[in-house]
Length: 114
Ligand code: F3S
Image (tube, rainbow, N blue to C red; front, side, top):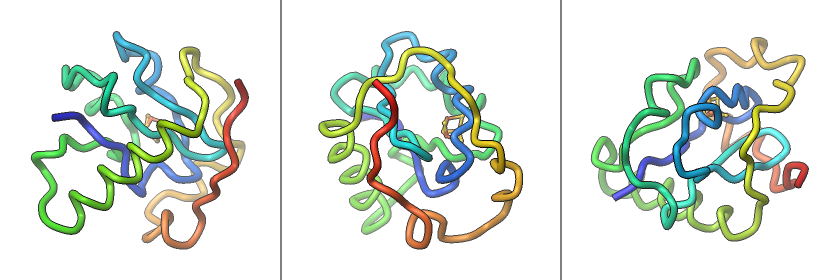
């Protein structure tokens, strides 16, 4: 079972996770990343690297929260391009520290650069 990226990533997109992923499992939107569950080998190296604590192992979630983040990561893995190199972090990333419900209020489907 894979790791998933959750709401805390939205508008941060620090990409420390991309730098350590051994299987290039991340997919990129303009302001958010997801993990392709078919690529993730569940090694866990990305989880402690994220400054926003946005990455969780699926076993840390239950019920509707588990379904929600599994579905989001799976859905957008099939839509957004692969990201294998760390790019620019959004200029206003630190301004989003501690903002709740970023996925619900600030999420964009706009894909990242291929
Ligand atoms: Fe997002 Fe954290 Fe990676 S903010 S881009 S999951 S390092």
